[in-house]
Length: 313
Image (cartoon, one colour):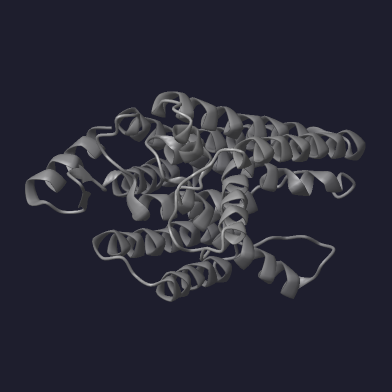
C-alpha cells in the first residue's frame, strides 16, 4: 500500500499516468511489489531460480510495460495482440505451457496461446469499476494458493500469497470511491500472471480427468464476464473490441445498485467459481462433473438475469 501511495503522489505531482485526476499507477505498484518480493524472499528461501518462474516474471514485465504505453496513448488492437503474442511466446520458450497428455504438443501450444490471450484480455475487460479486477484477483490468487497447498506446490503457494497480498494492499485504495486505478498495465499484468500460474499447477492424477477444468472454473467470473460482453455486443451489432457498458457490474449500476453493492455481487460471483474449482480439483470424476454442471447452470441463470437489464450502449 505504501508503494501505491508513493506512486500516486508522483503521478499527481507530475501529471503522469492519470485519468481524470485519478492515477493509473496501481498496476505498476502491484507488479513491482510482486516481482521484488518474489525475487528478494523467493530466491533466498524457496530457490525460485527456475527457468519457468523467471519466464513468468520476464514475460509479465513485457505485458506491464506495454500496458503503460497503452495507458499513455491508446494503441491499436493489432498492436495489442502482437505484443501479447510475443509475451506468450517468451513464456512458452521458458517452459510454461499446458501439459495435457491426450492431445499432443501442437495442440498444447495452441491451447496455451488461446488461454493466455483469453485470460489476459478478460481481466483487462473486467477492470471497468472500482475494486472489481483487484478484488477478483485476490480471491482467485487465494484459490490457486489453496490448490497449491493441497498438491504440495510450495513455489505456487509463495507466489500466490505474494500476489494476493500485493493486490489486497492496492484493493484498499481502489475500493469505491477509488483513489488509484490499475490501468491497462495492471489489468494486463494481473491476468497474464494468473493465467501463467494456472498452467504451473498440477491438479490431479490422470485418472481424474475432470480436474483439468479446475483452472477454467477458477477463472470463471472473468471468463463469464467476457463471454457475456461478446454475446451482448454481437446481439446489438457492435464491434467486439469497441468499449461499451454491457459488463455485468455496469448493468447492476443501471438498475441503481450502488458501486459498493455491485462490487460485493461481483466478488461473490468470483468466490462461487473459485470454491467450485477447488471442489472439482479434489473430486471424483462423477462428482466433479456435477459441480461443473452446477456452475454452468448458475452462469446461465446470471446471464438471463443480466440480459433483462437494458443499457444505452
